[in-house]
Length: 240
Image (cartoon, rainbow, N blue to C red):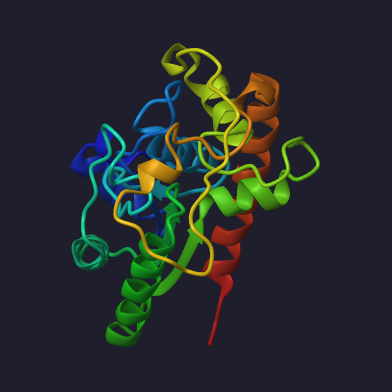
């Protein structure tokens, strides 16, 4: 049940089927010269929509902005603060709860460390404030890389590499502009912080997009969808 496509009557009827909702978080962030800025959002939203075809599940409109530190200097990246991100998630959950939703699955397609921690922190605060809700916060890319390990050829593949290029080739091939170039960032060692991260990561690719195929994307996405379906069912049955 895709919330942005529903009428209020359909939404009310949906509450008779489920009290679970998936909230996709993404980003507007560079993904090399070959993938769209909305790559993270596309992946999380596609998984949510496909999961909702398998089980009763509301899918909220995606949040297209995230906290992006490593790519902040790359053209096209629009980053928000972690505080704004936390407030967004908390406001969305509180509003959905007021309509009767109880089980919240936060699925983030953007895997930045500060971004993920902000969503985790917001989730912890929400379950402390509202005893009648359940929450799960999961990083979509971690599911893809871990569960799809037997499919991916590139060791250490991450941002805009083999996995993400395969995913977009499968779901949105018209948005893939070329093949991209193999690259890995070369940040200073020992935890040294740098202002211009693009200097150490000029192409914005972390992996090898040349090894991507639409079939790999199809197989990886199917695995992630299955894992999300399992998570929804586990959350609905969870009792503390």
